[in-house]
Amino acid sequence: MSQLRIIYQDDDIVVIDKPSGLLVHRSKMAQGVKEFALQMLRDQIGQRVYPVHRLDRPTSGILVFALSEQVLAEISRQFEHCEVHKSYQCVVRGFAGEGLIDHPLKDPVDDRRLLKKGITHEAKDAVSEYKTLAHYEMPWPSGKFATTRYSLVEVYPKTGRRHQIRKHMDHIAHPIIGDTRYGQGTHNRMFREKLNSNRLLLAATRLEMMHPVTKQSLLFEVPPAEEMTSVIQALQAFQVDC
Image (cartoon, rainbow, N blue to C red):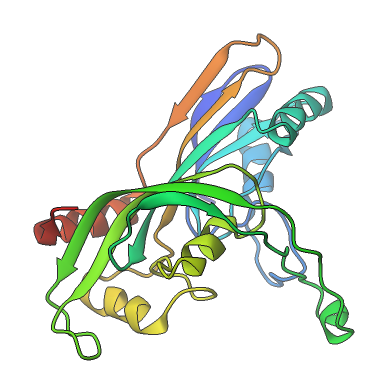
């Protein structure tokens, strides 16, 4: 079993750089999966850990765990009161700009039995800010166009709904590349074939919070995982002015 990359650890919290493809904890929707971040980290550091938030399975990046129930409660309070500030980087379809996405979202219902009964969740407030870091124009024909446009975008979620960034970027017609649920198959295939990209191009790269015990400000930053960084580097040869 491989070791998780720990980017910070003290007596109260531990922070890892979660790889794409790894579930945070066991799920009914992932039968047969044997590795989970929670169990791997517990075994790696030799003590119980408590996830205080989650990342989608295909998303990589910063993930925080508490080392006691008391610390879990305090960090959960920070999340509930929007005192934790996160940012993500993603590669999206089209030339994106910057703005605020205020679009309520329903949490997905994972239980197929509930879905068959027509039971869904109510939409909840969901807000994300975003800005474009770079535009790329690739020499790949797309429909009636001779080239295809993409953007590297930084997103700042103000709420924490499930799949929020993926849904919000799709809502403004800039779906994330590699998103098999909300994205576009044509562009996902082009990235697989031309850039050997086989993952969702979304990474949690920055998180700022108050230490749950010392009350000091903590800032964690990581670059996108290597397989995502290599794609961004390949795109840079085709960068155009924003």
